[in-house]
Length: 443
Image (cartoon, rainbow, N blue to C red; front, side, top):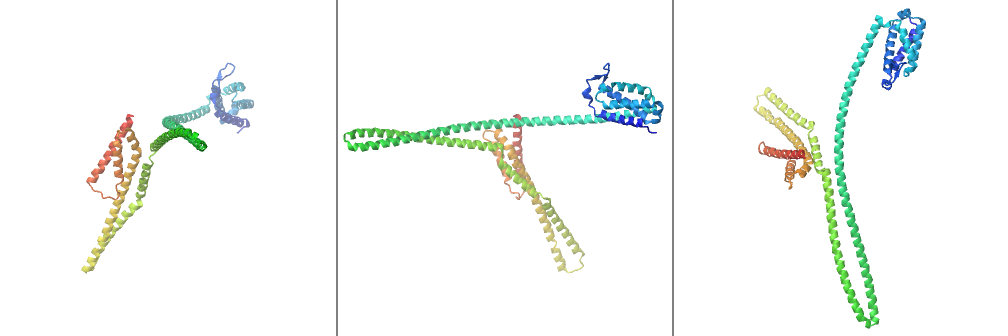
């Protein structure tokens, strides 16, 4: 039979267990409770769970529970559980009820019931399952931690490399800015010179006006002519000096113009070298073109069509042969006519095989040239920086690569000499690449 008090006790037991699952025990680990501070929060929760296990044993067997308890005792258990459930996070409010519940359940000797032993074994089994889950979670957490550390190290390395490149770019920008400021100062100097020349020109115009006035006055006074002539001579000397100064200024202007052009050429060279240092667009374009041609030619439909054509021609040859052998006509003309048809499918099969071979050669040639053009982008700058002064290695590398790139994909391929030349070129490229790798390691 099911009693109301027993059902209510069960419900309160389940509610308390759910509340315990949501508790964060670390928040209360430093707190103590009880009149003698004999409890900590974790110990209280463990004690409550042990009492709930005893209550589960009693409620699992209602008839036995009724025999060993009274209605008043069951009501007291219910009230104690209600208080614990209400103040589960405030132990000071239910310490008294907790201890009273301990005394009350102790009188029943529940822990000596055989049923209690079964309930205890179930609890132990649940604890083992939880332990295995926690061990698995711990292994996964360690793996995640290891992965995070590896990724962090990789990110730190990339960040350090990015910072180094950023520092190099900032240094180049500072140099360019300094050069720009120098050019601005020189331009201002040229403007000052132009202003001086305009002033000289205005002064010369004023002098010319004065000469005209003097000539007009000389017509009215012969005595002043000689004096005026002398003044004119003096003015002419000054004009000669002005002319000489003007020539000197023009020469200086020409020098400044030459210097300005030289500076602009240097700036253009700096810009061009910066572009080359940042990107080899031409070589990359060639590489992309070869890659596109390689993808277009490496089409299974094209290769398969030639193989299919060769197979069809061979099957046609076999069919004609069977047809000739099975004919019952003894006419020699007819037999010869049929035999003369055999070379046609054989010729078709040979043509398809040759076309298949050419297509394979084209695919291999584009793949080889694509690798060479990509290698130009990767190795050219290293050869310039780490090679000899005369750049002999760089020139030899570029010439060798270009010779291979310019070869016709459909050229005739001999089995001896061309193979040796190709192997020699490949060996040269390998030697240059090995030197670059050694120089890079030394740095």
